[in-house]
Image (tube, rainbow, N blue to C red; front, side):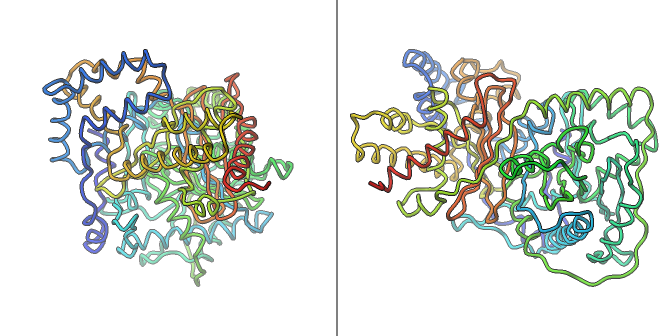
Length: 605
């Protein structure tokens, strides 16, 4: 299985081994009956009673003692006994590596960070060299086992993902991609890739004695790169990585037939990470600036802007603009939110260091024949279509932050999730399947689980809130119940007892055994339950960062939020090609909804 190449734990030193791999317990396989009950409960607010009854009969048949469900469950329990994690490899393979959709917008999340105080290329290069030095310092902490094990609710978290952040890259394949991780080879890579004006450079960041380059050494190298990358008519090779995965896979094979191309591509893939030095973008109004900045990090702004400065398959790409904007783009098969947040926190806390002489950065060349030229032209057209189709709306909600729900003994995350359902209902006159992400890193090799919305309690609250015959006290009680129900589902997911990964595991186990897909997964109800019209994510950051990605379905939204003490950053995306969805309308409705919920908790009159 090619995927396992990228997902075996990195072993760098004994000390790191002890620090990283000993503490988290295995992920449990939840009881079958509990998952099936949870599934039926999740369908109740989404479907009419007659459809639920039809599905209930199917679920009972699937879950009966000695039935198909029990047999698959037994196999999953066996699988859990002899694998590091019974679901993570399958999840990564199914959710990411087998997906054929383009990585920008559809998959790679972007994080846009608060603007720094520079406004020209000089400031850009000074900040970029600080950033590189800080990331290298973080990597050294991982390598020497000095990165403290993280805890959540008093439990140690699995630290597997950290070593995989560096020198990793996704490689396109005809039916599925795979992950190549080069950080574990005997001679680990010692370079990063810098891209400016669509030109790629291999920059060594360690001295010949193995010591890390200092900030001023790196700064000197970035000045050299700048002087070698004036605007030319270079083809934007990176655009190829934005294609549909099958198309890029074919172009990739054509590209690698040439020796020079192969060396250049390998240098990008093996590099510790990439740094994208973006050209200035058009000035626009302040209110739209936050949205434009997030979109820049997410996809580069288009083929006439900075999209050619990306290699979307790379696990870690840092983006630094000339206007003080900066951020990071990551590939989800290998990286995920919390480790990225820890890395960003380290960058923002970092200090400076002294310097010495260095070797020249190496420019990477590409030989472009007619076929590759055609591949690039096609990729440019497709990426611009995708970018023009994405509506991005970023705003800072300033009326209150997480202190308000906390004061009323409510989970801030659950409070926001219920608000999202209410806002969606007000725009679309229905509730929809929404997924919120819960970490599973309290288990060995754990990745993520979904916390589902809406609940029956949310449905009751949404129906009552606009009804004048329901008293304020009753509305407040129903709101509390809705928030608490979401919190209960969160707690269940954090114990490894969510329902979505388990249902997926049962389905994939049937496929693994060569059985036909069980009826319960072919039912229209399962289609509705997994058609995520709201893809949501909370940014686990103590800085004013904004996360951004595209919707999971054509008629859906993606909503990220970062609750701080007295304000909340939101980003909402939707596709313009869908008549029904409109990011700005949902954003305005969400602001009104949040104000109304504040009024419900703390009446001003």
